[in-house]
Image (tube, rainbow, N blue to C red; front, side, top):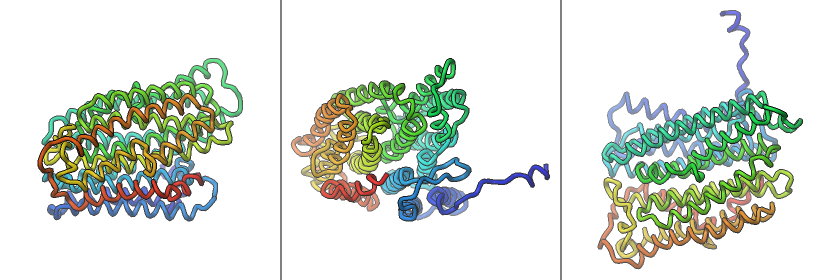
Length: 497
């Protein structure tokens, strides 16, 4: 055993390049130790530690982007992770979304008298899982990140002890999420059997050499199908979307915002890397299926959102429609033979960044309107908000208009980028369906705005909002307007990828 230990040579580690992950892990350990070894801190103090941790990770990611310059992707930890502008931008998106979600959660927990370190530790754990997913250069490592993200989400969904709906949502999410993880892992096993590797670069090299014959071809196709099922659940693609509305409604509203931002970003970036990098030479096999899924997701998400009466369920089905838009970007990125395939990648990353900000800001306002107990999320609860709290209603209006894709908002920039990528790669049917779905979905946001501004309702709404919540919503609204008027602030980065 001593001889074996002496012969073992560990992988070379560039500590600075994995510093965002290390900072997040340090924040988790600090919060856990603080919770177990010290008396209760002042209200909001745990949230400050979590927010500073996420902020530090975002700053370190920005520094890594600057140092990378125009360099080629770099492999880390014995080719387990990859370091590139693509993965750095996704990591930055996750760090920013985590920061905003923690600010929302801090004010929410103080209001609910449930302030403590464990929720923030779990949020940072989810962010670590998401960062590992987007940086993973191996399907096994990606699965470990996926499970870290998912397990944290299961617990966070069921974390509201005062609401039975939270526990029910957590249990449903856990059971269905376990099935989805099993599909994903079985898909990894079949892809390994067909190609002899789980490394993304090695899979791409193996599939580009020659045509897979006989049983290996069937094994590969089955593996691709199972991977798509696993990812489909995580990003709420139709017909794997049935859990979304119930979980979004039952979870504490700030956690819903976390799932809609960090969860979607991590899963979609991982999906994009697996299918457009590892499986790009087999795009003729998976592209038609993805096109059908995109059309179904766009149409079903938009139509079902229209008939809902609870705002969180409206936003849940709206998120499904948005997932369809992002999938259109994946289809465009899969046209590797096209010179404009890069537009699909940059459009997808822009959409994920913008949507993360929109969904956190929108659900932040829903958190305020829902009041203590987090129960008043019906459409009727928003009646009269324009009169009782016009500032809050105006912020909600801006965010809803952006989700609808109205010009001079960030949402228009996001949707235009996806449509442009689809048209440039001659996916005209997808582009038309996406535009029609956007028109249908706009009616959903219009219903909420009509309820706020034109319907008579409660004479007053709770205006005692925590500073951290106001800060998060203000940052989201400000970014929405700024990116709408100056889209180059974002596009100058995504166009370099």
